[in-house]
Length: 73
Image (cartoon, rainbow, N blue to C red; front, side, top):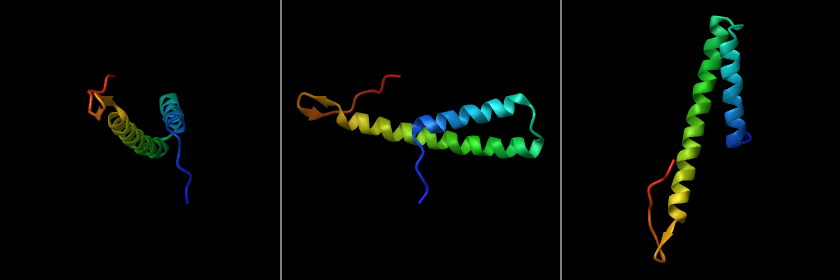
């Protein structure tokens, strides 16, 4: 079973990919491969953020009852 990456690890991976792409030192094929990896990481990050947001919404209480509140960014 593959180890599940922490959010911070995924963000660091995205930063590394961006740095590599911005350096301009990779060829087209290498850049495309890294870009695709970055898109996958970005999707995982968004999924994790959405899951966390839902958990926070479920934990908010109002007047002794659970109530959804608008997420403040």
